[in-house]
Image (cartoon, rainbow, N blue to C red; front, side):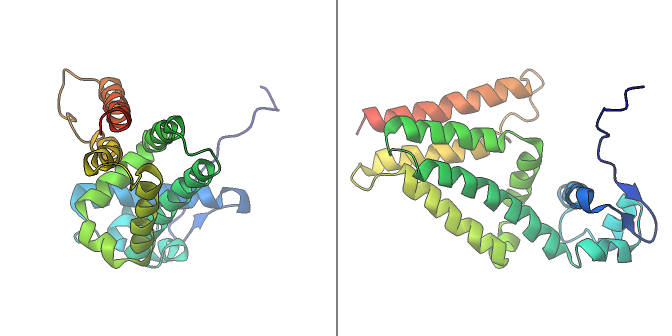
Length: 210
């Protein structure tokens, strides 16, 4: 047996607590987020209780409280994770020359950011729970962040049609995760490929046709 092989992070469950070492605390929080998100999507946020989340995790409510005292805390943490990812992308974008190629690459990178299962489920949850998201502090931050994204992509000197196309490039990426989900004749890769092509086409059209 190879001794140098790194061991995969493990979540060790116990009824009284979720045992973690300092190094895998983030993994445990991410695991809780995934389980809670699955329940929120399957059962609905309002119908899902902390007790049900704890039962799904195989722990007591007290163990769950240690990481997330309320359901809102779980949702806020999901939003904050997304905000951090988009912030990093914005920092990259704002350090580049504001050229058409940079804006297209931004859309491509934004697509990659969302082309991750965790982000897909988070966006799906956001779409279904807009009223809840708008009441949370992190949700208001996310709204401001999206305004920053659109401000980077859209040029006020361009026509309204051009600006709308640039905005729709982002909305296309969001919608691409849900459209044709139930089509057996389309693979997930087909859907992803089509999403990126349409988003890029919208950006190029915005540049070429006033």
